[in-house]
Image 1 (cartoon, helix red, strand yellow):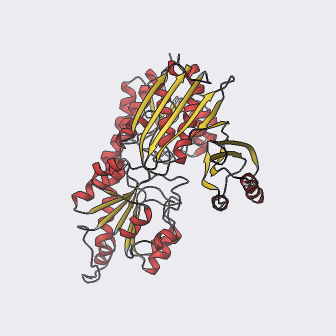
Image 2: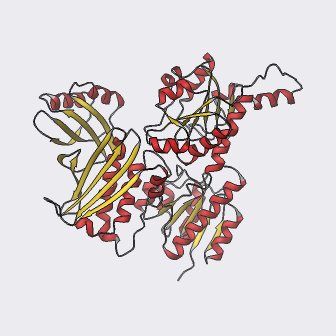
Length: 527
């Protein structure tokens, strides 16, 4: 057997190369490669270990016929084209928990820097000035800290802030009341958090729901003199709106470790003395970098030598014998979880999965992991099929699995019921003869829908004229309907329309549909 080879393309701890060598893997360290150099080099390697500098694009992957695994020493995989890697059969791994403490500590450090104006005072003192009266700070003791996102990092920040005798409130649609109580914090909505907080720190992934979450409207409703810290992802805070709020005095200060465009060598926010900036170093401590480097080396070595999969973003823990039978069920379960996750906007407290008929005879663990990964994906960018059950437990989401040998009307059926603060809702799916997944029930309403890449979910009261109004709005917006599926509980009762569309549905179109009197809920969806 040929000795596996791993290319270490970004700076990692030297100990990582030692781990590879100890496992019989040749590790070649070549950092700072240009994309063209990487394309010329990667063809001879089975594994690629990176941090954030190296971009693993579809073009790079096309030049990597031997590549089996890409390991990211860290959480974010923005620099890796995960769909392209999946299409090429390349496993993408990350280390989602190795630098959580470091990032949380950086957020706390940024808060203190804002509270006591430390960077500006340092510059002034070095310039020979002695401006004691100018740098009047504020205490953090007794102040209200608002945390947006209470995953692993946000939870650590909460514990540190409570130790500082701060009052902590949090906005996280997926935070259950029980988990909030365990953390010792109060759960509030975003408007309340901004209106009450003296400091706000952000710890959410960047996605369609969080992009520009802190925009001009949000800042206008915030407590005057609020201070904002972002050590999560650039783009969650609208940078132009933040600049305007700083000029007006609505925002007293901001501390940013991340920006929309990086590296941020020039930026309008750099002109504000009350803004503290760092070059995306939230995870940069010796301890954190050592941890993630060793973790990614261990994970990649395990996969290349034994086939074991840990913290993979695009591969389930499935044996070679099970894979052919489970593959269509994995697709179905991912669709069910994603469907429920995209419709969930309040705290998840439970998820009950029922496998009936043929599905009850399968190895359901990877199927449940597929459901949980897709269900939790809108909450966090660090969830994958391996750690999804752990993430669910950490968030006090009660996961239950039931199997039934028989089910009326179907040879196989998978049903997901999610419990939220607003009640329980269900979505069911089956496989047809060609192995394609079908959604056959939503909230107890029978359907027969195949999910496309872009869908529009509309829940409404059954009444004449809705379909015409819906079609008119989409037509006026030049949005083409590829498929249209309808279901209702009874005449005049609740109904559901599930449309496949060829283009993304703009926010203004969603608002127009929501304004139709019969409409209860509208949600664009991606699969």
